[in-house]
Length: 244
Ligand code: A2P
Image (cartoon, rainbow, N blue to C red; front, side, top):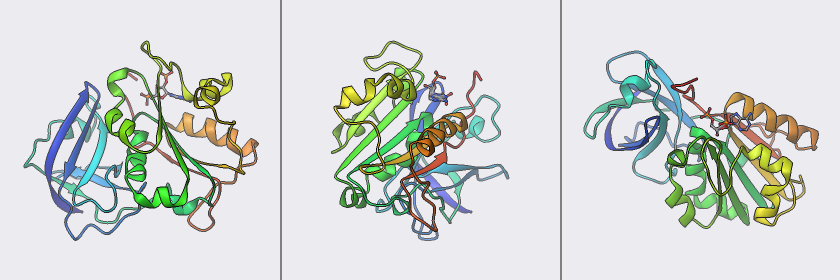
């Protein structure tokens, strides 16, 4: 672990915030989509966090929920610029475009803080060298949890937010919008096919499992560090919610 200084903190809602830190040379280079460990400087509790900043950036960025009574986030949510936190110096993980075979279109499908790795992926030029089109879907409970909405709307990607517990123009879970066909008609694209689409999934275990089953049934192969495939997945870290 390495001590890094907090640079900025942004609170989106009672349950969601992001922060940036310095990036010492001790932190090994990482690939967009990978994660590392985070902890407070003065205790042993560590949690995995996907890195939301691009591999080329001078600082590191992370997205977190706030868990009341949570061993790490109860304290982490109160960090201020100038504070020091511990950051693991060896980022790792398989949610990377290297683990996908080439295709026309990349889909990044997130729920909640599962958006974090995709923020790194869509800020990395390598993504756009490999894929002609990039689509990011983000499903959250409330509109205030649509973090990074402005950034995602400004990038050369298709951004498709959905909200499950408040009124919104594209309501409901992304999986429901696939089943009804609303997703495909809204974006004017065909349903996923191994010929044209590569899928990255990051969300709760139930969400990941549901999509993994759906993709396996449709003949998609799972990409790993040993053999690239047609979809990859990682669970969203630090994801228990205050009211669960
Ligand atoms: P819902 O409100 O219907 O539970 P959480 O905040 O619990 O991590 O969830 C983030 C978002 O992911 C919520 O909008 C939630 O919808 C949605 N979600 C949770 N489980 C699934 C699932 N199995 N498939 C699709 N979406 C899910």
